Image (spheres, rainbow, N blue to C red):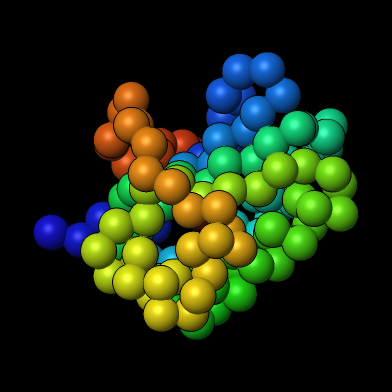
Length: 123
């Protein structure tokens, strides 16, 4: 069973924004990630966390989206990190030597359901 693409942004407490992504992060969905992160930077959070726990595939454009959104966060003085990349997604980040660059870690996720919102895509 494939997970439909969805993305959500939530306040994780303090000045931290959590962006949860589910489904495939590829050329059709990468701009949604960049747009969500850019939107989350106003007002300026101290940290942006990208949760990839439910991402089932990440192509080259998904990598680009992570790097572009990291650059936007850094320009605004926000810490940027990626959590819970698994299996093929983590392997892509390892092969491209981006685990350290993107501050990839594994962390417990309270709710492992796909992000919900008014429609698949951006919330």
